[in-house]
Amino acid sequence: MQPSTDLLGRPLTPVETELLDLYHRLKALLERDDLEPCARAAVRNALAALWNGVNDLALEHEQLIDLGV
Amino acid sequence: MAASECWNPKAETASRDELAALQLVKLRRLCEWAAARSPWYRESFRQAGFEPEQLKTLDDLRRIPMLTRDQWMASQAEAPPFGRLPVAGPEAAIRYHTTSGTTGREPLRALDSAKDWAWQAEMWCYGLWGFGVRPADVAYVAFGYGSFIGFWGLHYGLEKIGTLNIPGGAQTTESRVKQIVNFGATVVASTPTYALRLAQEAERLGIDLADSPVERLILSGEPAGSIPQTKGLIERLWGAKAGDTAGMTEIGTIMIFECSHQPGGTHIIEDHFIEEVVDPASGEPVGYGEQGERVVTSFGRGIMPLLRYRTADLVCKVPASRCTCGRSFDLYEGGILGRVDDMKLVRGTNVYPRAVEGVVREFPMVEEFQLLLTRDAAMLDRIALRVELPPDAGDDTWPEIRDALAKALAEAHEGLRFEVERAAPGELPRFELKARRTVDQRDQPIGA
Image (tube, rainbow over all chains, first blue to last red; front, side, top):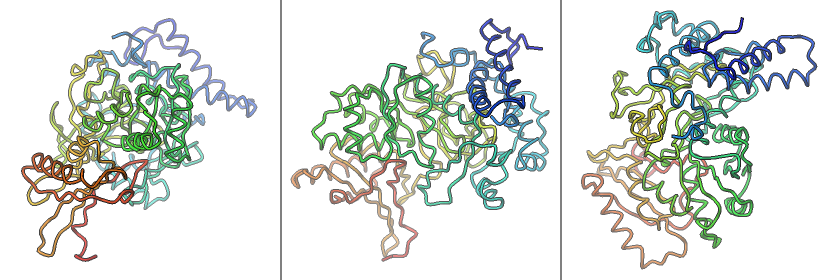
């Protein structure tokens, strides 16, 4: 279930909702075991980059080491 | 302030209450992470009787034990090479960096995961964007690109912004000056000392940097970026604005930056760090406007969590309202003022290297200098300023410069007499990274 507020309980804007959704989809992708190395690397880099966006906007704050990120 | 002046307007213009609430959320999560995964923090928390659930308000931060550099180094020695702070081994990391090693001590070793590394560039983006760097700029990074973390994060921050980035590694100073001019750089990143050296080299080559397209210098690595006289000299020689930043290997990136309003201080990136200022002796917090030691908690680096790390940096925090930019981030007035332990006591007078540099930079003829402390046979402390003038400076100019320097230094130090000596051209060391201009030989045997 996607949260509807940020870390401070403020409602998400439409673009924040979209960013957070994309972030969760990247995480889900990285948990799959059928990604080719080239695709896995691309998703890992994308997730590291997007983590900064959701972290800066106070949408999520977590560690990703268990996903190799 | 126009929103475009901020890299992250949502955080940079948040209310102080919102910032504090965000810091508390991140602090709880970081402590839970550290307690669950870091052998060092698990033990440290246990010894202190601290549990993350005790964090109800930001004031509860003080329940968390502080971490010192000595403890970190001891941990590295006990469990080489990275010690017991990391939550994972090097297999989880993509970068391995060290401190600069300019003190001659064993370097501190740091790891970064892919996310941590991307975050470091992100912190530089706050500073670069805040000082006015934009995608249309052409940036030259005068940095050696080695194992010292230095400007690595800036390099990737520039790429992230979309700036055309010229890595200036493995170059002579002459080559760098020529590249800066020939490639049309509008932004140059270097230490303050090296910005001066580049300017001296340009003058030797007959190049007037003030006529070049360079508009901004991003300074880091030394407190001199906020010493008004040094900064003023750099800005005059380059005909450009100079912005101070500061970071450290222990966090991997910068935690403070000067914005384009140049308020005489550096904003703290407070949605990513908690910066406490404490009395170095007691560890108790000091208020706005009082000098104390920086203690940093960083929310960015996950593989090596950093909670309440005593930096030994001397700072003076002032409220965000001191700057007209509209950011809600507090500032360090004058940037990093020095090190808690770099004050020298000479014949009963306190001498701070920063203050000496401030006086010396009033004399643009001085190309390089060194502060030398010795003890004579009668056990009397002696303080000498050794200065280097340009090779073509005539002997007739020296007595006037020497006497003026001695007078200005004495006036700034309760009448303390400095011996001012002229060094031969090229005799004094030059620095590309952190300058070390104070040499204290008072503990050495006489004649050694």
